[in-house]
Amino acid sequence: MPSFDISVIVLLGITFFAAFVNGALGYGFSSLTVPVALVFYTNRILNPALVLIEVFINLYVLFINRESVSAVWKRVYPILIGLLPGIAVGSYLLASLHPGWIKFVTYSVLLPLILVQAAGIRRPIQSERLIGLPFGTGLGFLYSVTTVSGPPLAILFNNQGLVKREFRAGLGLIRVAESSLTAMVYYHLGLFAAESQSIFLMIIPGVLVGIPLGAYLIRRLDAETFRRICMSFDAWVVGFGLSRVLIDVKLMASPWAYSVMVLAIVIDSYLLYVFFTKWRPAAMREEPPATPADGKRGTLPVPDP
Image (cartoon, rainbow, N blue to C red; front, side, top):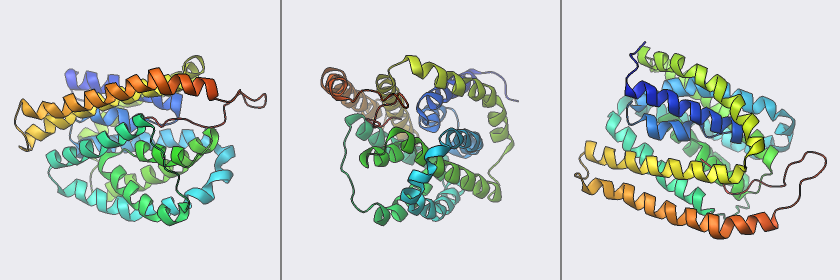
């Protein structure tokens, strides 16, 4: 067990917070944990621990939304089929490439995805099955390299108008498959090192407390405002991480590399201003009333981290 230095304290704190968010929203564990934890750990050490945790988290999400599985499985099975080749290629690259370049790819993919979510951009796709296989392959590749798949899945599902329970069931199906397959491939590639196992054991208690706590407290919070604040946190941290890794891989020199972080903060601050002054008030005026049957609103709005 490693000593409790600053990296361990930060890891315990961010995984507890991420588990709280996941319990509240149904996902978000990796997309909040990874940007912060990569400041202290490489993907090769961090990913195996997070994948094991996510197998159990995703099984929990799928279980509590099991009644909606029958309504979404036909829409998501092409994505499930496409996962395997992407996971195989991504896992091999994770085991082969320099950790600095893996971090660079991770942050470079995450930042635009988060900002697209924050902007609430939607372009409904008519042929879901046609894009399912290539989307699944890309998703499997992204997840096996970064353990993050929530942002692109949120963009797709919100874009296609899945209602809240179908949204969560679809997420549960895909993320159980991707986390389980990735864990098996990692095992065959020998990626479960002692340090990864140590991280796994350290963060389990926070996850076990954070998930039910988030599920309980979200009933008393405005979910959409909470989602949007989490996105801003993610964007600012990813901007910082990308600036740092640009220095590490010698693509930009300090202090110029931090202009990336400043740009991310400026863009997100503008989108945050738009959300609270224009989009959020309009959404509150237009959203349908809760139905007596389930007390839930009809659709899930802007995607989250």
